Image (cartoon, rainbow, N blue to C red; front, side):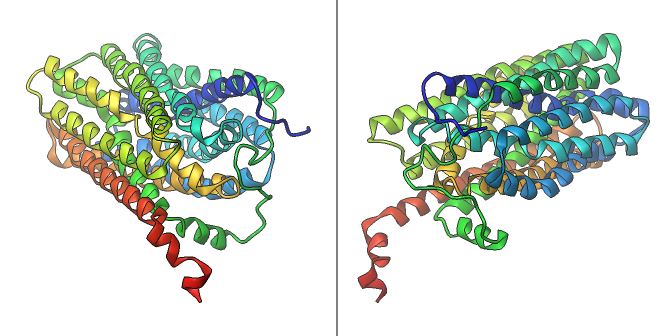
Length: 433
């Protein structure tokens, strides 16, 4: 198929389809957080085992597949790759409903992790070739609505399904949307001209992997952005995975109501916050003369602080009502960093390294953030014990989110210094002679 240029209304249709695909990604990743209690009870799992299934079982295998997918995204037809990945991760999610114990469910979640590793780099790479850099934070903010919407569907619909039909049916229901969407994506999505929205020309990547990783590491501020997302994910994903257990154990909320509350927190409010941050930073940049990576990173650095502060307050709130006020605030901020920071990453990386850059971020975010975050909370909960064990685990995990905000601030400073006239003068031919 001949590559299509990014023109007119069609790019918004592409954004819609890719957002739906990423919503399926979010549903299939998030559903494990809702079933931890009934699955743990049926299989007699400890909190540490639950943390392994929710975290490392998914995160380690996601990380193993991330770099190969990143290389493929920069070299091959992304429409075809996305169709295959969407079909596989949806099917693997449905198969988790047939689990008979710890090891079979672990293998099922590992399969979901491997196949989902391609979703984010493919989606971001495609969108970056449909939207110019001045619109990318908004486009990625809309695309990241999928995280909140998917989690909302998983917890709201899943809570009802589990209450009436059991946890196995929740896995079956979670896999269906992606299987239905895959043929629509394949038949209606057009592969764009790679790099057509960027000023610099692009070529199919042929250099060695380590050299390309070195090129990414040499870009000022990019490594800080990578580290920041990994740290932020440790707290945010860990909290979203265990928040249902927290509400059930600490405040005695029934699973159907807990699912609804988490759907509102991370679904409705998370989606609103994610869109607002993406649109807001594009609006700010437009008023200040155009996209500025340093300004955008600085904007993003405030969000993890607000997320961690409100999340910790929710953990120590003495009543359910007060807890929910802080929890809703935390949900609003939880996904807001995505649009601004990924706009910085895909813009700084450029079209030739975009897929690899996003894959490296996702590898770290899932191996360390998703894997360690969910496991850490489970291990701390088991160590502390009692009704407040999960609260202690979440509170400690959110310290990593604060740490991530510091790296975003450092990224902003590094990018700003590199763009200064004095820094530019050091790299002129005369200065280097």
